[in-house]
Image 1 (cartoon, rainbow, N blue to C red):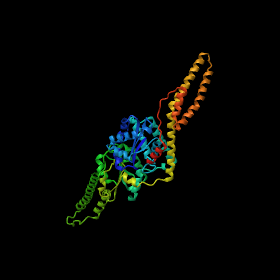
Image 2: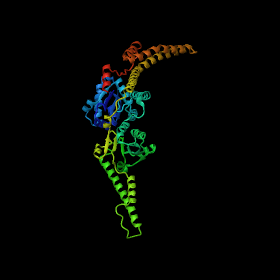
Image 3: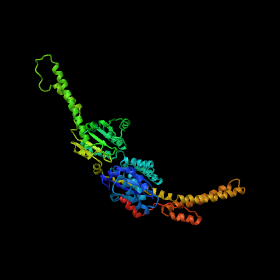
Image 4: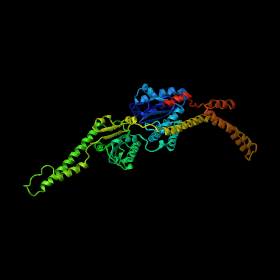
Length: 484
């Protein structure tokens, strides 16, 4: 089953609060209730989702697990459980699989078809592995999600390059920028989004990029991407020198705020005044002392030579932001304090603003992609149902093969040295087991596992440990799918 809070049903502030405590939620879920055998949490800038593997039928345990999820998330994030119950959407069984496949393919993203989400889903599974909270069924679910997203990328226009939140943000900024090649950019962060942001900037012609990392990884990132980097001591001044700041770090707390921007502008303005003064004083002294005639009149005003020197110095020294400075905040939690908007000339584009301006879906491509997702989910469910009868099939085959081997042993003891009897008996066992194996798959797909296991017990006395299947009524599936 899956509980979801996303940009479609939750406020940006709530998603930010959920992201802060996301790291410990999976472990808390597994510990919280005995029916939970595994959990994987997907937390991105636009969603918080917990995928939960239950060792009881979902129809019986869904409400219990939903309450457990709300309580566990509440304990980890500090958000009241009642508030979470009002926000969380629930999907179970096939609907949960279909939802994850759609998420991984970018169909539930702000920018439909965005490429970064597939990697985020994959890393969520890796985190669950590292934390010991995944399960064999969740492994199968997430691996199938990755396969489905790759299939959609290869078979629909939604997979083309350039569909991402950072590219949408730069599109929104296009009207404010005359020439991208002249823009100086500070990139804050060194993760996957930083790489995507750098690629998007370069595609527009930006070449002057510096990177800063709150965690100290800037130099490594800069060397691998052939850009410049700065340390913490240079952060304020650099914010006063650049035209665009793009933040996409997982650091907690604000990395950029109004105080930092004002300090940077003050530092750059002081440098500008000092350099301009130096440019004025040096040539003026040279002109005065170079004259051998003390009676010559003192120059009035600034000579043409000095004026040229000042002009050249001013051109080399940036005047802090005569035009608007763009700050793009892609972080969750927020990397940028909203108070930067109080600084003159600053334009802030955060996730909430970007989300409001997201383009409409490409209808035809999206329909094809959702069709692929739906088929993949149905296949995933069918395979899962088949797997639910694997213990019964194994038990039947073991029973039959044990009888065959006993007969082979007796035949051998009677002098059947050429092995013909053994070969015949083993071939007969294979033929006899073929039809029961096929019927097991068909019965599992139709939700009739109990009929199969009952028959084995009645006919052969074989007791199969009951492995509950995930059975979801059609009505529940439809409502869960629409809610997600």
